Amino acid sequence: MQGYSVKLDGFEGPLDLLLHLINQYEIDIYDIPVAVITEQYMHYIHTMQQLELNIASEYLVMAATLLAMKSQLLLPNQAALEDELAADEEDPRDELMNRLIEYRKYKEAAADLKDKEMTADKLYTRPPAPLPDKPELKPLEPGEVTVYDMVAALERVFRRKAWTRPLDTKVQRAEIALEDRMGEVLEAVKHRKQGIGFFELFPERTKQHIVVTFMAILELMKKKQIVCKQEQHFEELTVFEMGIYDGSTV
Image (tube, rainbow, N blue to C red; front, side, top):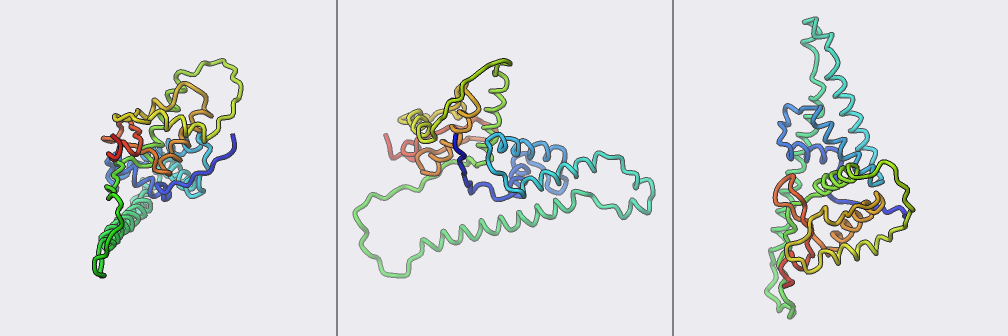
């Protein structure tokens, strides 16, 4: 299988991933449990490595920082035995907390500016002009599924395959074309008004087949041919054909 490079707008950097985890697990940003956040962060990194995606160095730097911070908090604090040194000691989480708070401010400000931009786009100063005879398209609302939700779902796919994988087996390597798998995924969701479960698209096959399937789903979402939806956090993702989901297909 040839290398396939995917750029996902959902990944905006390690701070964005950490902020996503903090919101998802309802963690107090002013009292971050380093052990928990490090474990969840490493799950995402390992899943991306299993997909053989090129992970930006900043993600790995943050992973090393979290592991070092976790180790530092686990070590016995000898300086705390001396009052003078203990008073000057800083919580190793403070720098990370300040960076996350600052990043959240910019992220929220960017979202506000985006809303203002969308509002401004609806304002017109010229006189009304005749519109072409084309049907008015309803705005698409593709649910609240993020790239992080999809990576977490794929992690569960890998975990399930590990449970059922035989200890001794010999398989013959078979090349899987991305375009062929895209067609198979599209055919699987076609005309299904209730959609299809994310896990149903990953039958009991090789890791290569799982990776190509995941890439096919991302590419179809990028081409706006399918859409993923999730009712609540931690629930299974559902994949719909775009026309069925937005109501344009009966």
